[in-house]
Image 1 (cartoon, rainbow, N blue to C red):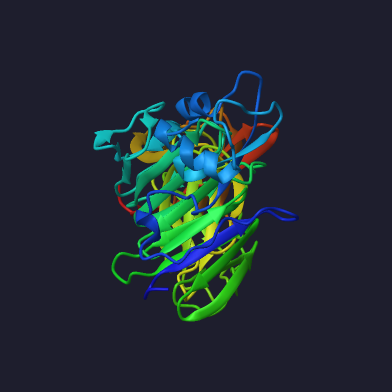
Image 2: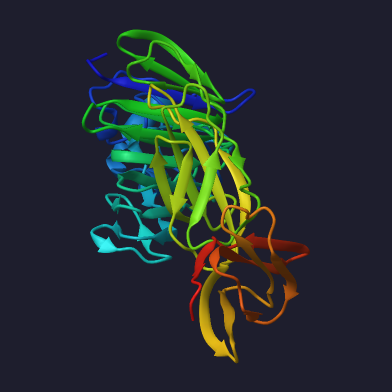
Length: 443
């Protein structure tokens, strides 16, 4: 095998055919997934002859002679009904298969044009994502391919053999990352592959990820379901079961890091921005956190990569969302994902104070306005500075938006408002930050 070249093979659990192995200079540049000598079976029907079958199924009808020799047919015009003919796979006609954009966000280009939902994807198409941009493609068999930010994948092969309906799907990762959920294939001659300039994966029904670092030239692969075989020039062949990954630099697979736990992620996100706290994972050098509109993350809305066990996102409209977090180890392998549902209900409170004369006294009107809360109720607290644990005034629940206090003694005070609202069957409450108040002795 040439330097840097490697092959990955995948099978589903249990008895299954393994995709063919070949030594290649550049797997991603192969024009076909068909091994030399691989054949497709056909049972002769009434009225068949080799000339007719060659016209229907072969790229070049004159290649009927190859089929004739392979099957030792004496007369190409006379074929016994029920006879099994073997056709070399590399000679067969194909018809194009089209995928489509299922969802996207941000700056996504399909074949050089801005993406749109339902936009077609076919052989030769380059799919590109910009910063904070995501796209998910759907194929006719319900397999899906997802590209996160700053990635580029070219569709090298997306076709179906006219004889046997065998699918060939090859996607080259030019930079960045891609993940796939592949519908299990019962046809042993169908394939689904990701490739980089130095690596190739082949799967029969699994969930896996692959990436390519254009700077270091390193390829990575992580398996979430199924089983993957891996071979590289400098190392013995490896087998990657679910929960393991490898790179073009590793001599053996390593276990993927466990999913980080998110503290309070299943609660309500009511602040101006979205924040998650992660429990640190031993061995993690970074964390990837994504927000999606669905539990399968077919529609990814935002993503952040952070060295600290915390994640911050901008504001989102009210609704139900999902957060997915993974830990990244020192080999740049992304770990197992943890997915949690959360509610977004904006609850931003605006607060102010008006001081006016009230006879010989002063009137302090504390007012507030909750933005985004539905039918909220409030609780008011006023305390001397430094004694916030023992409020001198506490009122609530209040349905109005102000509270009047007459003639506060001179001194330093702090006050705050708690907003409560019912979301589903749950009462969600949140305190505002303290606001400072200084009352002078003279009027």
